[in-house]
Image (cartoon, rainbow, N blue to C red; front, side, top):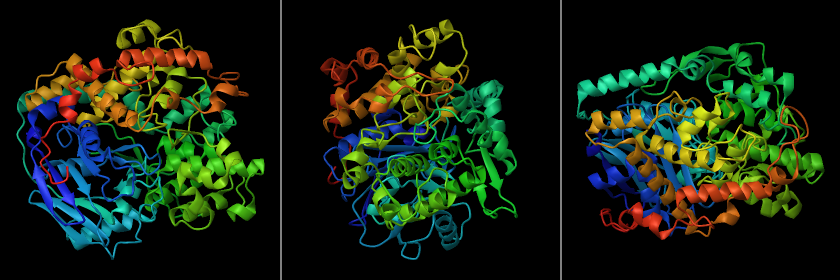
Length: 630
C-alpha cells in the first residue's frame, strides 16, 4: 500500500544510493509529499547555507495518495532565489510514476563532476551520462531521454538552459508545461550537474479497502464536478481568475502602477485564449480538465507556437504585469519560459521591475541593450533569451532579488519582494487576507501557501465564519478575522500538498469542494490510517511549524513578516479598489491574531509548548534516517 513506499537517497558525488523505509510514525506525523519534504529539509539542509553547495539536499516528494488519487509532487531544497526555504509543487504524471517505482521520496545530495541524469525504477537508480543533453531545452530533453530508453511512457522531470546556467528562479519541468517553478529548484539541479530525473514504475500496491476506496473516490469526483467552480475550471482553466482579479481591482498592471485593465482585460481573458485552444487536458487521475492545449496558426508572427497552457499566473505575469496586452505574445513567451525552464511569475516580476526602472530613468538602453518600454514584445522576448542564457543585462536579472545589490540603492528601493522572493501578479492592497498571506508565507512572497480565495466571493459571511470557526469580517476589505482565514488555509494547504491532491479541487475557491472530512475518508480507505479532521489539521500545523522553525533558525521573525512600503504608503490610484491600501497598525493587529492561532510568540517564534504539543523535538531530532552524513 502507499505506506510501504520508501525513501531513496542518491549521492551524486560518490555514485552511491540507499533506500530507507519510512517509519509509520513519520507517516502519521507528516503523511508525505510536502510534509515529509519539510521534515527532511530541516534535518538535512538546515546547516547548509549555500543553495549551490553540494550539501544542499534536493528532495522530490510524492504525496501519500499520489498515484492512487492524483499525481502531485513537491520539490524542495534551500532556495537559490531567497536563500531560505525552497519548495514548489507540480502536477502532471511524474509524481504518480515515481510512486509506482515503490519510492515516494528521493533525496539527492552531492554534485556530479559531469552532466548526468537519473533513471529510477523499482530496482533502484542508475546514473547516466547527460553530456549530450546539456544545452537542450526541456521538451527536447524529455524526447531524447525517452528515445535513449526506448520507452515512450517514461516520465521525465528536467531542467532547461536556465537551470544549467543557475538562473536563480529556474524551475523543474515535466511534460510540456508542468513546472515546479517558484524558489529556483531548477537552479539547484543545475548546480549538481543533474539534467533530469526519469522514472518508470510498475510496482503494484495494496489498497486497504478497495471497494470502500472506490466509493470514496466516486464521491469526490461527483463533489468536485458538481461545483460551479469545478465546471468553470474545466471549461476555461485557471485564466478565468484573471477576469475576477481585473474586475475587482487586485490585478497588477505595469508593476503595481494600477490594479485593473478595465475593459482591456478582455484581451487577456479566457475568451481571448479560445481562438487558439485545441482542447483541454488533465493531470494524472483528475476529473477536471483545466489545461488548454493551444496552437497559433499561420498568419501570426508567432505561428507554429503550440503546447499547453498558459495558466492565469503566466498570462498576468507576462501580460498585464509588464504592460503586454497581446495574448499571442503571452502564449509565445510562456512557451519560451517552459522550454528554457524559467518560472513565469518571477521572470515576469523581474522584467516588470526593470521596465519600471527604465521608465524612471534609473536604467537606460546603455544598461539594458534593449529598450524596456512597457509592452514592447520584441524587448521582452529578447530579455527572456538573455536571462536564460545569462547574456548581457539578462545576467543581472538572472540573479533575481540579488540584482538589487548590483544595480544600487535607488533601484533596490523599487524592488518589490518579501523574504527575498519576488512579488507576484496580483496587488493585495484591497484584499487584506491576501496581503497577510503573502507577508507570512514560509517560502517568501507566495499566494499558494495560504490564499483564502473564498474571501472575495459573495458568500454570506456567517457561512464563512462557520467554515473558519470565527468572525472573518463583513467583507474582504476589512481586517477582522483575516489572521484566522490565513492560518486555517496554511494548515489545510499543507495537508493537501502532503497527500498529493490538487489545491484547485480542494477548499480554495469553493467551500463546497473537498475538505478534511473527505481527506480522512480517502486516507483511511486507502491506507487503513484512522485520522479525523482534527488530527489532519494538527498534521498541517506540524508541517507549517516545521517550516517556520526552519526560517527562525535563519533569523526570520516578525520584522520579516511584512509587505513592501508601496502597500502601506500608496493608495490604489483608480478603478474598483481606488484608495485602498494597508494600514500599518491594522496589519500588526492581523499579525497578532495570526501568531496567536499558530501558538507562536509575539515575534513569530513557535512557543516551546507548541513545539512540545506537536512532538517536533522527537521528529526533528529522531534517528530514523540511516544514511551516511545524515
